[in-house]
Length: 359
Image (cartoon, rainbow, N blue to C red; front, side):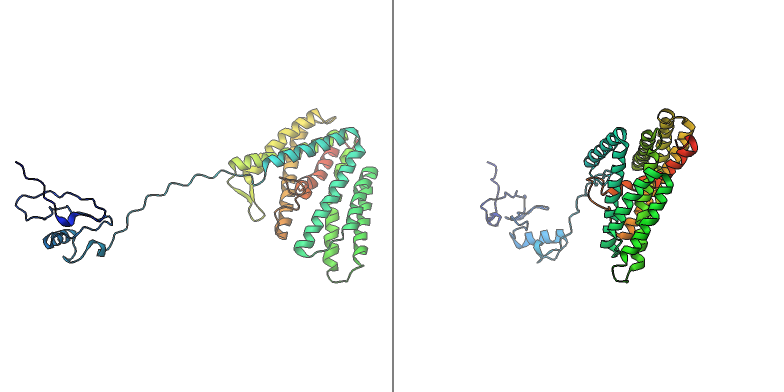
């Protein structure tokens, strides 16, 4: 009858479970074969006999009296971390809100433009006054420059209306009177900071209402509504082309110290989109216009719109802000939408006069 397996009393663990140890022929009772050992739940082999402990200790490379818990533990190799998921490019704004606000503004502009011209002049005046409020507020908050808003708002509205009613001569006269009003208005306060306040006020009068007056001058022509629409379409198409191409293919920075997001590829996209749109608009919307004039007009608009955007970016960097305001969700403030339009208006007006006349 075969011999039953032998068990050592010390193989009983505290949980009550046992681990059978095979018998090695010729070995003393309780001896553990090479590579075997009963383990406790903590992982340390139970000492059975002195010979067993000495055998296991010699196999593990430790002193005969050293237990497993006293041995230096080698660190387990850590599992490799999964590669980080590639991050998608982001526009940095709420695209849905931006599109919704843009469509709403476009509806207001087009409705006023083709119904009653005077109503559209009122839209320009409102945009100018709000833009002046945003600009002067940021100057006061960030630089402690107190450009007087009251004479700027009144004078700015007068500049736009005078330009529409009396042409460029009326606009220049209203501009001069507005600058004089800024100087006089600021005299009611202490002289400290007078120079910087009036300088900022005259700059604001030129930058916002005077440049915006050229949109009103475009409107005075017989096909004025179509000229204004062409101006707006080309500026928007230029910005869209710059965004689309720059976001997808942009790698070379255009002006990293001023606007890190703008790229040379985006500029080429703006030029290409604007030139195509210009050729179509001049050919089909403007009386006496031709496609090659539209190509030149589109090129000029893309350059002026980009420079205008960089110019306001320079102002915002100096002020340490991202947006001029929060009035338009997804866009920022009114001034954040006028940045490309303001310097482009006189460029379009001048080229229209050169190409097809002022009538």
